[in-house]
Length: 111
Length: 114
Image (cartoon, rainbow over all chains, first blue to last red):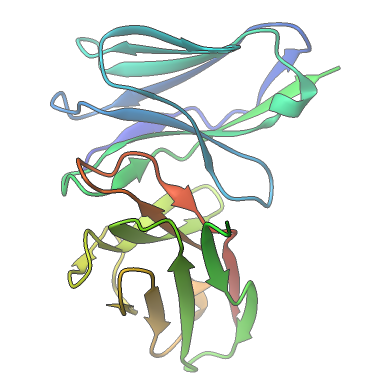
């Protein structure tokens, strides 16, 4: 099983600050990575996917991938209280057909 | 467009009872999945179906069976429920053409086994 590690948090940041969420993984051969957001009591929804080393930006979100160091991160700029949620890191599992998820990091953005 | 629909949304069972969770998607996706989510454990894959006619075990398949009834529907059956199966169950689907890609999740089914 490809292990995915995340700090469970909670990570607390003030409104307007940059939130930095990190994820490490065990299999150096992993190629595809995903960040999902899950509000309390709701289902996960995809925020970003990243496949190549470097940064990928989408609005206030930036995903960063460093395959040599085996970590992927998500930066949220200008954090808003509505960003308060659990953020799940995921990668394609050994089957190649499903995703293996980390346990998630809880983010709290305080007004 | 309903996306992924799961039924029931809530269920309480007694130990030893059986039940089936139903899942249907209307996005013409090839792949479908069942995950369970427990506090502090994240999402764990129970079974998946890469395409119509195929099913495979995930990380935690014991105590469950699945059926890919057709391209739209993928059911999860608990034959003899145990308290350890108390969880929130999510069905998901994806195009599955080249790897899983984006997973679209249903709203979840909260199951309590007494």
